Image (cartoon, rainbow, N blue to C red; front, top):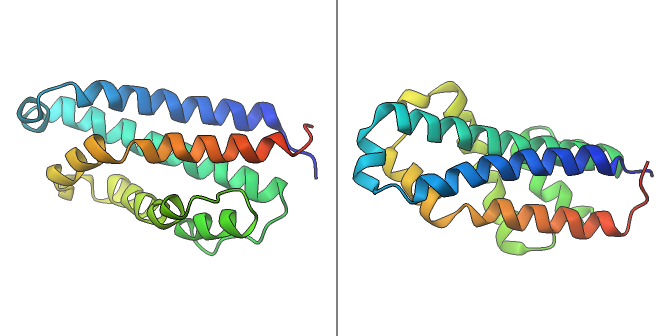
Length: 145
């Protein structure tokens, strides 16, 4: 197996860029963030892009590691765990929830509970950093293309 490290690095940096924007949103007083529709929609879009980045990285790693293909995106975490890409049990458990949340962001964004988004901003952005660390750790042991 040969890994296209530059592609995966680029995708990780894009994901991390969206997470950085979300971290800026954490500094906004919650009442201001939740009551400003334009600002809130920006947060939803950055969150959607961050999750899609995570999914894209996952699909590339799965393909390049020749792991079994997921039947749907929430299965990605289990497959990455089977392949030794992700070893953090908490992350393995949380990623399917985050990936399913992306479907709400895309298909039913007007029904999103703003309190849930606030909880993600305040308590779950670290999952993206943990994912990036796990992928980068895995990449160290795999040759580049």
